[in-house]
Length: 145
Image (cartoon, rainbow, N blue to C red; front, side):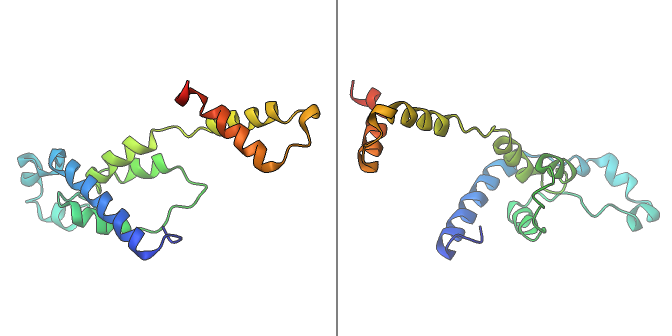
């Protein structure tokens, strides 16, 4: 979000925090069971305890997530979330929801195809403004008819 102005960043962060808070009450931490509490009474278990246990506080999860270093572009975000699912359970639920959406360029390819059908060798002298308007009208024809 470095390219966004500060007010837009704050608005995005508040919206994401609301999403996390709406999911957080439904997440239960498996580390909070009585069995795990009994195991933690062992002195060695307390010393070598895994400090990546999740917290149920949505704001704490969000601030810790924001302090994480940025993921390199060549790494798999799904794999990253798989390793940090226990640390950020509420955020991981939201990430699974939105990372599962496949990206597609079908609509932009349809638009280029439409433009290719409009600008033919016989109509190669069309002004760019007219091509834009014809593509717009063709793409939105179902709204009026």
